[in-house]
Image 1 (tube, helix red, strand yellow):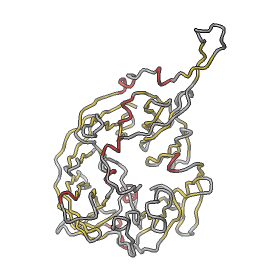
Image 2 (cartoon, rainbow, N blue to C red):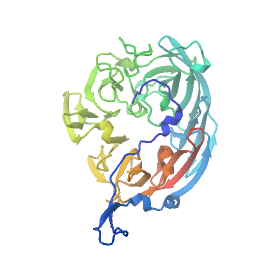
Image 3 (cartoon, rainbow, N blue to C red):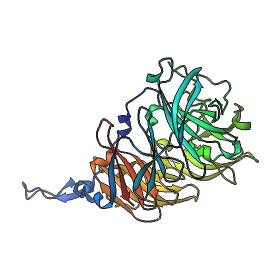
Image 4 (spheres, rainbow, N blue to C red):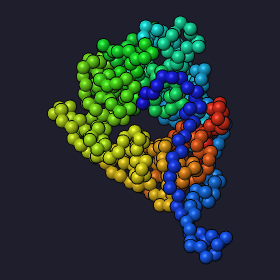
Amino acid sequence: MKKSYIITAVVVLLAVAMVAVVFVGKDMININNPNSEMTTEPISPAASADKNAYLSIVKSSSDMSTPIMETALDDIFYTIDTAGKVSFFRLSGTALSQVEASGSYEITVSCAYQDLKADVSYYTDDEDNTVGFGLFLATDDESVLIYEYAFFYLLDLPERFASSNKMLVLIDTDKTDIYSNDKVYEESFSFNTSNQATSRFIVADNRTIDDRGAPRADYCMTTDAVIRDCADELLFFSSRYYRLFKNDYQMDIFRTGNWGNNTDNDRYIENIVGFYAVNTDEGVRHFAKTEDGFALSVYKPDSKETTLIHEFSGDFYEDYILSGEYLLNRLTLEIYDISGDKTSKIAIPDNVDFKPDLFEIDENGTYFIRGAADLEYAAIVVGKSDGAANIYYNDMFKNIIIPTITDDNTVMLNIAKDASGSEFAVAFYSI
């Protein structure tokens, strides 16, 4: 979700808000007064736990200069440093081996009548699928006054819009997203690989400006998942009818017209929460606001009717974490399977107060959760949605920034080694 545009250091990504919880008590006798009544002394399960127990699930670990992130290509990962240098890696089991980029393009896009330019390195797999990444930095071009940073994401056009020698370029200008697998993109361009020309893909008429003097970043937002789910029309998110920078709370789903052109008035589904929109045979699955919380709903374009599938209480952004097709309730520790419409409970000891703040799960229900346990201890929980879970404690877990489930039994973790955010380790844990 889009944030304020004040540029902050990468180390902000490492901050973890540890949540106060209630300790489990244990009866103790006051030895200074044998006649005193028994009093309750709080003893934390986390305090007495073996902080090195997690070592039994560590498969391997190695140092990295920058975090390693997933791509949409099978077993291909990438790194990008703050100067824009990109490297690609192939994962085999828990072994990462660097692979040569297939090539690079110098891509220039026009935003707010200013040219943002980036060298985009790309990788093409054996099935001719391509992804590429690059950075624009204002420090490299003093003529650009509005934008300080822009992340370039190069990918194949959705099949519905496929055209010879053309690809899609998505732009994210939020610097705090640089080390995120879940970026939200605010600009989209068609890119001609033959002559390197770019043009607007989603054309938004009557677009207003924000406090930077740039077009509103919350006017036409999209994600990698939504792009790849494209059917006859491309869906995207917009807060254009709401207060600037309030898309955390108020958004609509729009849809494009022909060849990506936004008709600008096709307000498809109103008052939704979360960057989630999936095309199904029944209609567009999404989360809609309700009086007491929100609901998983399906909008049927033909009848223009909405069917409620499952209701949730609480605040979507405060009380839940979305990962793919799963929704974690941070308060009840229940995992809701969106596509299967079923709920499972994380099986950890009842005497542990655990408040998640990081959640990653794959399509088979293998998950990794990081959070605060018993007031001051960082903890991780690993398991499968249909089975038992294991909980481990170590203060180092606070520095985990990017978890990726690599197979049904393994999670890859990027861990900051110091507070500066300049050194990282990548570790593989068993699940």
